[in-house]
Length: 96
Image 1 (cartoon, rainbow, N blue to C red):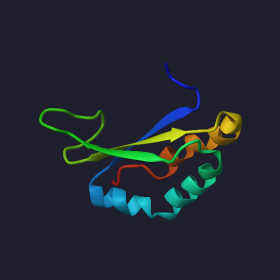
Image 2 (image 1 turned 60 degrees about the vertical axis):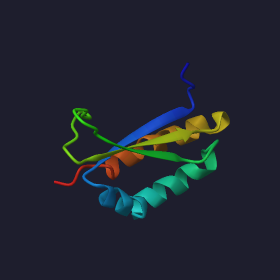
Image 3 (image 1 turned 45 degrees about the vertical axis):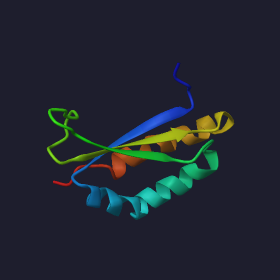
Image 4 (image 1 turned 90 degrees about the vertical axis):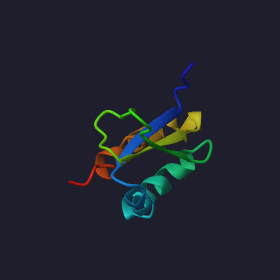
């Protein structure tokens, strides 16, 4: 059963180096600082890459897909909801 305070933010990067640059970007650090007071557990980023014939929808060959798991304290859920979706709109976009 899915808990209402658990979220997954999925990002797609053209390479692991691009993802690593994103980790230290101002947008990412601001996002994580903003959510930090509401977290119920540490962030958990999981990197995935296609293996064999696998493919992520919209991902190109060689892309790295990152799933960031976020667990919010239930009493702080309303306060954190606006921030949970903010990062994907602003900084997890594939370079063109």
